[in-house]
Length: 82
Image 1 (cartoon, rainbow, N blue to C red):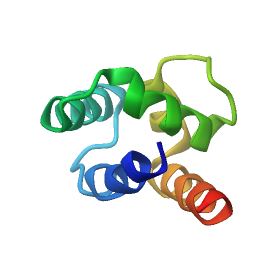
Image 2 (image 1 turned 135 degrees about the vertical axis):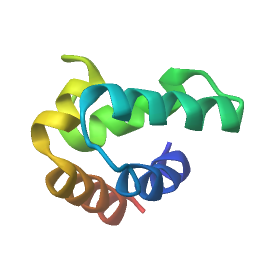
Image 3 (image 1 turned 180 degrees about the vertical axis):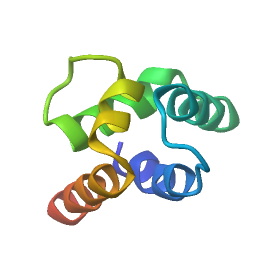
């Protein structure tokens, strides 16, 4: 999970728009490129930003947090568990 999470950072950072639809599309494209199901990327991402395995839509959660806050939470998770 941490490797996928690390690989998602530049994907999310590069988004021109940080709305729910753009985030969900980027994560889905990442999963397709990696040949993994959405849960293999979405679960680590959800835990990193929300601290839980369940909650509102992932795109909505990240969009509400905003790019800077979401990326900071991911980085903090990577540092803590690396």
